[in-house]
Length: 376
Image (cartoon, one colour):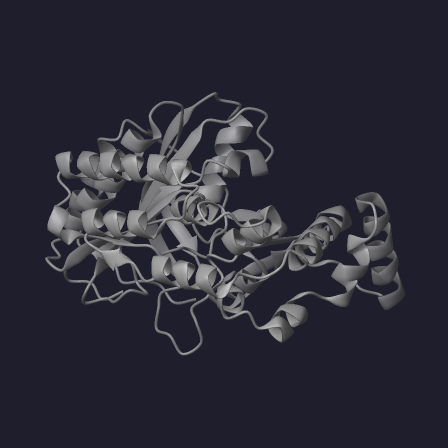
């Protein structure tokens, strides 16, 4: 396992300092996390990036690839109505083949589970991440912004059939699937829908789960990641039903392409998105107003407006982000090695079993990347 290079103590202290002002409680979370849960949230393709271990019971776990899910689980287990947590510890990811990236690395960050004004909280968290990143001494930083929810609100302006809109929104963070949707290649869509999924779609979910278990038994296999048959059957049924929802028209596909091509200074980007919207735009207008308030709050907290770019196609593979997203990037390190990242994930606590939920937003910083003398 490759370790990242250490950085001077004074530099690390400077990078930590802004996050210490967030009013968060220093906490830790278990290094081992449930593999099945991570795969449910991020997709099976994430497995190759995870360090997987098997316990005595045969249940697979993985070393935490980051802290968001781990801290969220810790928060829910504590039973607190709200909470703000500071973390400072190691995370682990398998480096891509041929890469020299560190596989064990330090992350520091803040996760906030709070009611209140989400736009103000978004601005605060992004500003904390920016200040922490900038404290490392780099002069080539930029703040790339995106919003999963903004794409969803734009799609809703197009007046699509509900299953088609759901399928398109789900494809946002999956480039290959999104390309299939926009290109309208029916043969590719057919390939994406398995025969098993089509079979299960005609059954009640209880029967679908039983059929899936019988197929596994006949084949002598077990589901990956410890996921239950009912969960897998539900997903297969959803996929099959969505595949029957029809296709985008050429005009609709062009509008989505134009949305995804927007990348500019945030004010100009918001204007461009507004101009592309279809007639059912009330939710989108509300989202755009929220973004203007968010940008104002970030600027008031010291984020330079000329360093911000809003990129409509920006998303992240981890499926728990459902609102605004950001990355602090260094020109020297490139887009694939962000210095900091974060965003909003209001839906995650419910997916983890929370009976009551608040807003959820957070950020992480990689000190070794923030440090001007570092290369990872």
